[in-house]
Length: 269
Image (cartoon, rainbow, N blue to C red; front, top):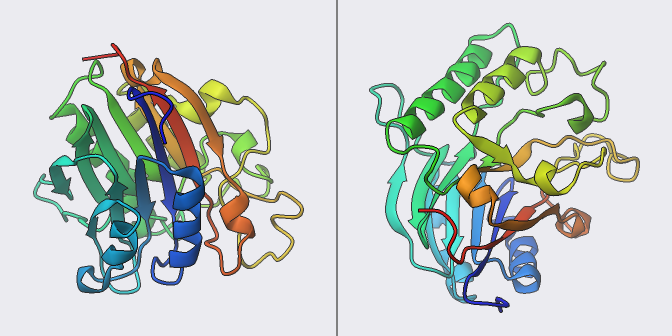
């Protein structure tokens, strides 16, 4: 239950296979009760999306997915409007990586950014171009005075303090300087990093690699799951934090959720 009818809680979560993660997701929803949950890497065709599990908890859900890869979804307890999947710039639409809607006057852009594979590959160039395309997608529709929330798995750690080993990982496609610069250019539209608005501590991570069984214990992680808001919306953000509990459950995703709370009364256009 929200404390006031102007309060809103929004979360983002790379679920890494939604059908395998239903117990983790439903436990998270029952505990945290977000008004909106944006999900990435659902890895399921639309016909097999577990819609009923969300509807039983009072959520409407929209999604675009494919078998074994990618996939984005938004679950909301509030009405969703102006739903749109993918780009419309004549290039690959990437509908399973980009899902947008409006809720309570907030534009929500949910993204699963390409990983890039290797910094010498065409996949990495596609990743860098993807951020440019997204910036243009946003600029053609809105201005920075609009309340916009861009969330998701960005597959980029923005700063050295956002990875456990910035020296050893400097050539990783999720930390390479070109990837960080591409993210920064997209953010220059007017986005504020909500976690850093409220928490300046090092060691704040959202991803812990399955291949390292001691990653969580040793806090050897990455912060690649972000919540970014334009300044009018950031001004109404009262809290933002990482919830590690879902990463501690049985059969967890390798990512964990990020949440933000907003008091929207009289804020922004």
